[in-house]
Length: 598
Ligand code: GLC
View 1: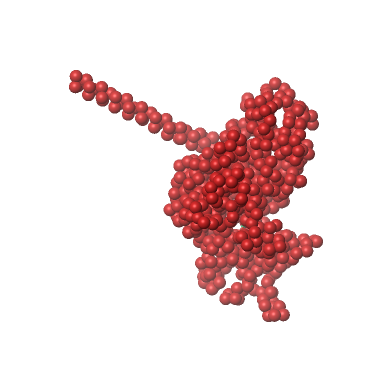
View 2: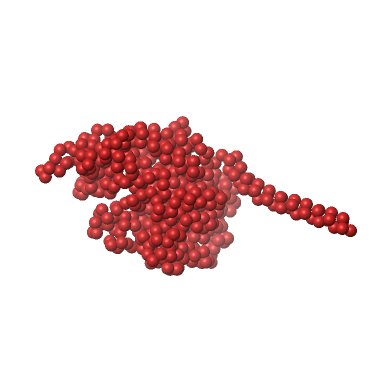
């Protein structure tokens, strides 16, 4: 009896062990399976993912001092995973005097204490990777902080740092005996790009703030140091870089050359008053990017995205490189920001032209990307209207290419009014009290709105580095999770939808384009066909999509998703709608599947 009991117990244990083993094998093989699938299909992660820009000062303040930090960002890993983004790009978190909020780096391989320490960073990367999220660092090679030891040593002409920065003798002296800069070059933030350094007795060049001296990429040791910095972070396991201000990396050798004035410009301190032929987009830049590409390619699957602000398509496309000389995986596509500054510029036709500009100029084998906002421009909902939030997310998430979302745009955050007294951004400050509002970047950098509690759940400190938008009581993540329909819910659904093969693999066509209406279609043989329709006008319309179409469309379609502004019973998801009489609210976007019979 005892023996048979023992045998039974033994069998039970064996069965349990087998079950446990099967369960653990199944879940791990699922994880392995996903990775293996990705590897097998050879699609780099950044082609299938949404990129989310986290501005570290404003995500979440877990070490409460009013400014966000790394522990705060790590605490949001579940939120980010549930949102459906695959890549998180961190704006600079390096040691910095914060004159330009981290874009002035005094140590490229240290974390600024305001954000935490290296352990916090390692923890962030580990947790993000555990959750299947990639981490991209901001890389700022054009300039360092004037507090960087390289600059301090360069001022003292200590080798090998003497030529680490761009130094020049004065052109002469003015009537007061003050040194005159070598040329007329201007800083992006206004005024001369040259700053006199008494100790060295020379001017140094700064494309941005005087506290951000430009590094001299003609000095081989600078290039080597930058490679070492990239290697440091790659060895730590980061998944790639967003390269800051790449257009400015070189300037011509002859520092006596003046840049030509733009005819009709009235403000000689305004950066826009010169044509920057000697200080931007120099051919010497490309071999440097190429070296970075080669370095990154020594590691598996790394992303290199480049910040290139230009409205010249030829200039922009050069930064992709080509099939035999690949450079960045992509230069950011800022056309949706630049061409669509406000609602009056936004029509079906202008959107079609803007989207086409990128797609039609894309070099062979290269991949598009779509950006609606970032830390340097106003929030998209404020620029073009809150009613368009869902529609524009439909556009960037469902067009072919990689969408880039600036934090808060998934809930439709708006610009925040910042008084002159509260203004932090140096660009705003440089324009003075009368004009700061046209140039300050603070309104789009305010704390993320998590819930309706004090400071929107961003911090438990007594103040925040920039004021929280007063609309946080109603416009916040928690409220949008609870609401039956919300921007956040639409965003999450879109993130799931875009993973369908038809969105990953098919080409795009634009069957109906009018002043009011923008449409695009994604179709792939033997897959469901999707049609996205956007009403860009500020009034409700009933459109006949069967008229003026370049493609044969069926009479009817089924609603998959619609903007939250539409509450009609007739257009609820799942409903069949007539394409010759499709009702749309102002700014509405609708995702439809087409019935197969035409
Ligand atoms: C880039 C950054 C911007 C910064 C500038 C100088 O344009 O996006 O925020 O001020 O470079 O680093």
